[in-house]
Image 1 (cartoon, rainbow, N blue to C red):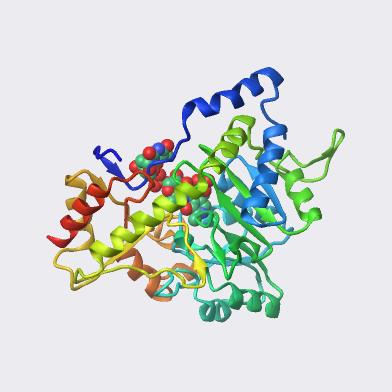
Image 2: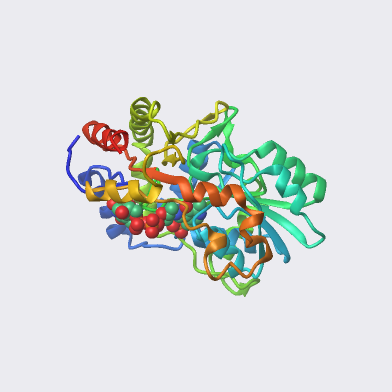
Amino acid sequence: MKNIKPVFVTQPSLPPLEEYIPYLEKIWESKVLTNGGQFHKELEAELSKYLGVEYVSLFTNGTIALITALQALDITGEVITTPYSFVATSNALLWNNFTPVFVDVDSETFNLDPAKIEAAITSNTVAIMPVHCYGNPCDVERIQKIGEKYNLRVIYDAAHAFGVKYKDQSLLKYGDLSVLSFHATKVFNTFEGGAIVSSNYETKKKIDNLKNFGFINEVSVIAAGINGKMSELNSAFGLLQLKYIQEELEKRRLVDKLYRNFLSDIKGISIPSLNINATANYSYFPILVEDEYPISRDELYEKLKSNEYYARRYFYPLISNFPMYTNLKSADQLNLPIANSVADKVLCLPIYSNLGHDHIYELSELIRAA
Ligand code: T4K
């Protein structure tokens, strides 16, 4: 492990370059670069197997996958969602002309609070779009019950939740659809990429048509589809990445464990616990800088930065506080006290498989010595 600085919040894992070359040679030979080629087919099959889900539709990135997943529902109206996420979550709703309705999060999981979801349902509500924030499972059982009770569709933004199992099953099995991101900053990356996980063949077909301009065959277009196809370069890279995913997760687990050991007794720093019913993927390492800590969250952020540790304030500002969302009634800070409070305290520390243990120690000592 190399102790090189600066240290960013994440660093993509890359397989040995020479192992990618044979894939490139095949692409050069076949001249099939995109449009559902052999590597695309193989990656969809391998991912369904690895993740333990029925169907995977690959996409060019997670945002286009989210937009397409919402489009596949053929509904309009209000969608209940979380303000505590990356802005792509709500932007995908606006791209489909849905009205986002922000609901507050739970103080332990930072995910949508089911009781508050139920209170926010109106006759215009058509769906719920929760996020498994940091890969931590939402309260999927209660959300499922709410969805059934009010006849709402449930689409999970599972951008952070690659490979997470809940009660021994893939977390991605919950809801009507789950959407993954394979961006460079994610646990499993294909440079850029994403996927929609669905549970029946008809839905997968519909999604696959939508990501291919809406074509159902060579001569017929049935929807205003988009170009969301993953290329053969990215698909081949994904196949190679999958070979290393267990190693990746194991190294991340160790980083998480070391942080917990070093930071757990620091007054004013709290570390959210992992869900005991789930297997984590250690995609992020959030801490909360509480009032008892000697300096503010932003002062700590700057202090780490001046020591070349680039922690990030994911997710500050809240989506609901971005100027383009503040006009929504549900964006009112009084409606979202917990999300606002967590966004003001959170700091995501660097976590990635090759993060040097000396760095973890030094960074922890900087936090201790505030
Ligand atoms: N839903 C949720 C809940 C999401 O979190 C995201 C994406 C999406 C949907 C949408 O999925 P995609 O359309 O992106 O597939 C990053 C990512 O760009 C974004 O994918 C991610 N969430 C978000 C949480 O974080 P930034 O602006 O913070 O990234 P950036 O470029 O500052 O990268 C962070 C650090 O990572 C850099 O300081 C250095 C390192 N890095 C980054 C890149 C891109 C590298 O070492 N190599 C790289 O290639 O948004």
